Amino acid sequence: MNVLIVYAHPEPKSYNGAMKDIAVRTLLEQGHVVTVSDLYAMNFSPVLGVGDFPEGLQDPSCLNLAKEQTYAYEAGTLSADIRAEQEKLRQADLVIFQFPIWWFGMPAIMKGWADRVFARGFAYSAGRKYDTGLFRGKTAMVAATTGTSADTYAPDGIDGDILSVLWPVHNGLLRYTGFDVISPFIAYMPGRMTEHMRTARLEEYRQRLQNLDRTPRLFFHPAADYGPNERLLPGVLARSGIQRNV
Amino acid sequence: MNVLIVYAHPEPKSYNGAMKDIAVRTLLEQGHVVTVSDLYAMNFSPVLGVGDFPEGLQDPSCLNLAKEQTYAYEAGTLSADIRAEQEKLRQADLVIFQFPIWWFGMPAIMKGWADRVFARGFAYSAGRKYDTGLFRGKTAMVAATTGTSADTYAPDGIDGDILSVLWPVHNGLLRYTGFDVISPFIAYMPGRMTEHMRTARLEEYRQRLQNLDRTPRLFFHPAADYGPNERLLPGVLARSGIQRNV
Image (cartoon, rainbow over the protein chains, first blue to last red):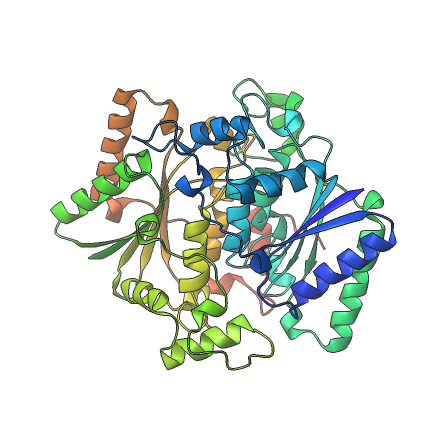
């Protein structure tokens, strides 16, 4: 497999750094090809805007990002840093996102990697999303750390179910573009772990990486479960437990 | 009231720009004091890192962000751009976040505003979160646009309930730090609206801004509903409809 690890932490000695390092080592040992996008080390710019279109805008009078992305992607004129990341994604069978959960989401440098690299034309286009997404056949996994406990991220925890917190990443970024999504690997509160606990949790991560094929994928409703307005069909809804309000 | 509008869009002629403009006008007409942080115009840097600590690190051997933030906030040595935004927040009674939903969340430039400005010591500290959050007494509201329809963001829609998509912002960033959170105002797919629809939706936004006092706040369980492990007490859980798994 070709594996891309997208990694966002400013401190190489951090627990995120250790998770990234053990992932690289473990995956190489298994014979995979591993590429790391170390966003802080690359000084990756996370701000989607006119800079993404260095050859100028199709319509300089009003910046329409989706239109400019579509044109520039097809013309091969997106900025070089975006094209380099898109090529890594194109090659990848598996993408791992390694990051600390800051304010219930990705660090801005990684969110902006998504904003810029997952450009229209490359990552989605008319009629190509979810089951027909452009990255169909690829697999992705979140590997993340938190500042609070596993209890706070339980379904009845004060921070909310970790799968709710990660819904924008899992469904929004990954499933939307066609990825199969492996259950996330979360290291809760590494800052409060003893050295023994830190080592043990890294070992668990190593085992996870050795057993990705046998790790459950997250469930998302297939396209056939939705009606033409992209809402669940009545029969599916009745079994889902979701309350339809309006 | 002092109102801070944090605004993220690179195109002033965008629908987000129009929403920001009508908010400024409407709130001024009502006699409020309005400040706008136009993050693209400010060229705001969204990358939390060593640059936030221009006087150097307390421990240069290993960057511990929470510790460095706490120290620098108390010493008044966070970088000037962060201190300026913190002062605006300190003054604000109401904060409006105006942004396009990109990949199910804030644009990176706004996520990074949160990562950097909501520093430990200023926005949270030991024992100061949710009901005892440091921004208690302040109110916040999301005003956003989408690229897909309201149906897709229904509870049974393919993109997921808009309140689930915004949970990391509403609960994670805002309620966590003590804000009361007003129901979001969402303009769905302005890119597909006719001129008449655009104008009508802006008028609805104007009316929302004139009636903020009467607009419902989002519900979050009070601290008393949680046990010492920060999970809902059994009696509350039974009434909540949440499935406890584990």
